Length: 208
Image (cartoon, rainbow, N blue to C red; front, side, top):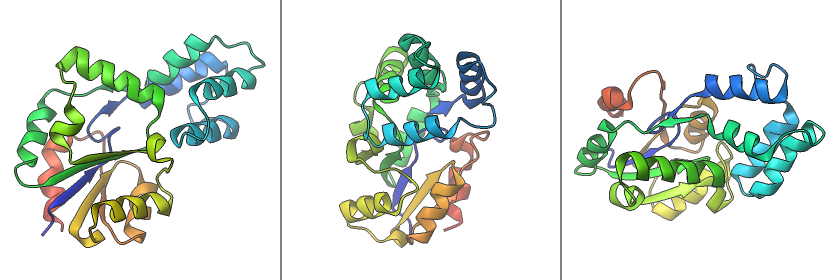
């Protein structure tokens, strides 16, 4: 029986607006990136999520891409525009789950995004302790210097929890992250962010 749930954060619990982000980024870069960012910038994001580069270097990567013509604040605002909201009803959802499951967060996230998430949750919901109140532990990529879908991050989490992959359920919106987790022996399922996790969670758990 599944007793441990490991949630991805963005597009599972915290809503993202990726179309807005790509639209804003296309405007900022003055080129169409709706099908994906240039490799140079995609690599910078991966490195930033793992804290292989700091915030200043991350911003510089975007400035360098456009020959130094981009305003740092404009880059930050664009980068954060993908963060939409944490719907209020999901607090009750997490509270009820806590009665039955051990909950964890496993997220590819970075310093700028986490800071913005904290500000939103504090300002809108008045919650400053959500990480400790609703989760046994959080695993943020930029703090552990590991990112999904690399095998090492699943190994790090599993060793830290002293669990077998068959004893947990991992829920993530990205196929590559789910497939990597399955390859490591975890129960894992891909979440469709167009559907509220509250409405499909029981269906997910019921499959295992």
